[in-house]
Image 1 (cartoon, rainbow, N blue to C red):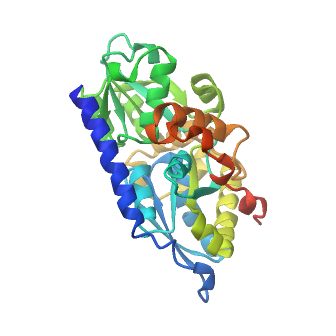
Image 2 (cartoon, rainbow, N blue to C red; image 1 turned 135 degrees about the vertical axis):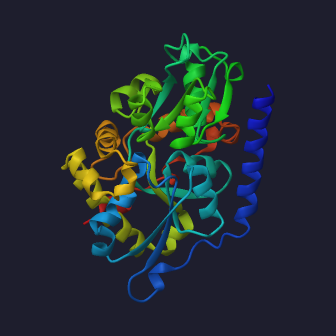
Length: 346
């Protein structure tokens, strides 16, 4: 119960931080008005995560330069942190989960996905090999379940899976496990019995014999089975104000990213891995390549929002996010994403 109280308190503090940060938000610079190559800063919610691979890959392929835009990629450990930095006016956009645009609309803040990288979460529930009697979400009761952070997409999806399978969210303990080394350590030292994470953390946990995939949402089939529909996740989203003021710059970003999505769909995991910075492989190139192979089915080929996807996301958030639940019936999904720029992409 103490852990649950801490989680609720953390969510309240995070919400307050968002509200406070908005007072400093100036709607972003007018990049379209600048002479020469427009400069854009983008915060990535974990730049070395495979779910957000298109961001760095676009830079590596030189597609930002080809499109005529100067992009500064920054990184934060979680999507929620990245979102707050954008709302504070410190960056122009975020590469993070689409579901943030819905949560923010419920807070009367307008943001929209302008390029959709993934049609599914690209995540998996990984169960510790030491955990007894956990064969599905129905066995979450009494367990310690890891999420990236309270109020994150991994948190809401964990709640959805638990409830859908008959386990109340108060029946398990939520643990902030992060991703990468912190998630692996939590599995190793018994800090969590299971947790939701992404590649290459998934591949590392399995390779080390620390965990096995329990629920796989890296594919359309696995996501449909777990959630009952597609759940568009990784995307480039920006404030509506920035998009309105800078359509030429946003178009250049879309041109670059759509080109990357097409490139990913026509190249092997080995070819993709070869283009990424060597340190992203964490000293194990073969394992990194495998993680890309396992996760690549999540990506769109054209940067477009999948049909029915926003409705699935709203269903999840409208059930478990107190913020969205209160406004679920008034959420206008058409204002949370646009296909205008990907439709016009070169």
